[in-house]
Length: 405
Ligand code: MLT
Image 1 (spheres, rainbow, N blue to C red):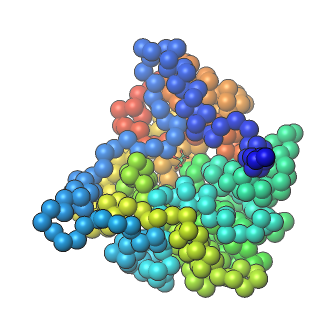
Image 2: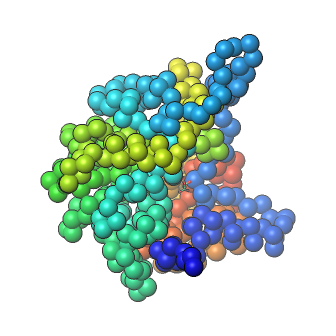
């Protein structure tokens, strides 16, 4: 008689963004004439750039040529892409990462959910609070989070690192030593970014305590300030304790194309002496058949001189929105964070309104969708996230509507 994985049953309700989608669709169905501006999920709105489109065509249009994209892609990624990544994202920044330490995947969401599979089930995880829900939920599904404390709204087996206005949304080192520490910088959802010395403290702590850091750098292209590391490997000795996850979604608009990668350095060893590199390689080879050739060719084009220029254009387009949103909210009297090194703006809800009440208020009275802060964790209560990934027109209109509330 089969049974289900009871750890899944601990997660009630839907995934945060599915729940928001459901509520918005329900509201739109009831109000078909209302123009809703969606600044909820961090999904891009600009089209793929010409260089990417040409690379996609080129990869498909193989007529008269010997090479084709027939057959399985190498499970860890084509050498042409892994070498390009190693050179451009790492060596050029002084980070000594080899191409075979890069594992190409279908995106950072999958990698950040799957990476926990190579760790012992009794390992303790630490997450920022608020946090991108995938890190936590994937560990709940794996039975690593303990039971849910209804009163505290926290998982009993998890170390929470509150990120609040008081600590500038930069987590303090946890007192209880975790085995696995998730860090996302620039941060989703708060839109803030860790400075190099702040990240170095975590690297030193992890090395002292034999913890591993899973560093999500999906938003690194949005860094505009000096002193903010683009990669954790800019910190000394990070190769001994950190895995880095990256995405082509937010910089190059691949949310629907799907491409990302993880870096697992060969020298990263577990406390019992195993190298994570071999385990992740084994996991990848067993459960993943390689990102498609077509996508990987498009990924390579992102690093070409023309590709790079275009990607810069995309990032500055969205960061103009971030500015409009930040300034618009400030002049409407809101307290606002983020939006300088990241495409997310994190605002305090007015009049101590709960995050979900503000979600309903904004949807009904302004026709604007955002993401309730409490959906990212208990310390997100009383906050709200807007994304800068909309169009210029919609971002400006949303600010006008909010100012008129
Ligand atoms: C978000 O809105 O937090 C992100 O778009 C979700 C994701 O990248 O998976």
